[in-house]
Length: 82
Image (cartoon, rainbow, N blue to C red; front, top):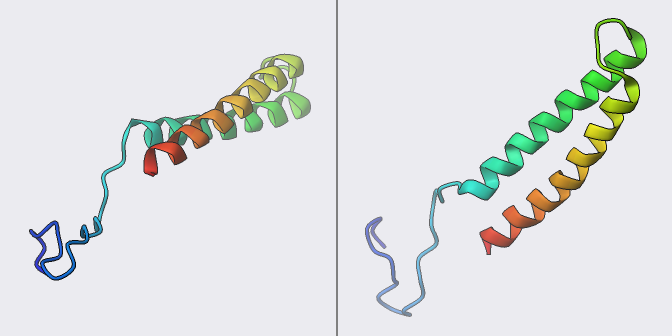
């Protein structure tokens, strides 16, 4: 098959996409993952150096909320792949 063909001429099966574009759900999932890692570092920093970081309770609560959002974003991104 050539690259510009979208259907197999012999069996009429659709051709697989070689490099599918990332959609908004995949980018949202990536951003949430980065924010979660950042908040976990901030939480660790609030334990070790409490003068320079927000309070431990605030960091843990934001990290918990981001963990819930991450779970939802991952399921949304997985749903869009199908």
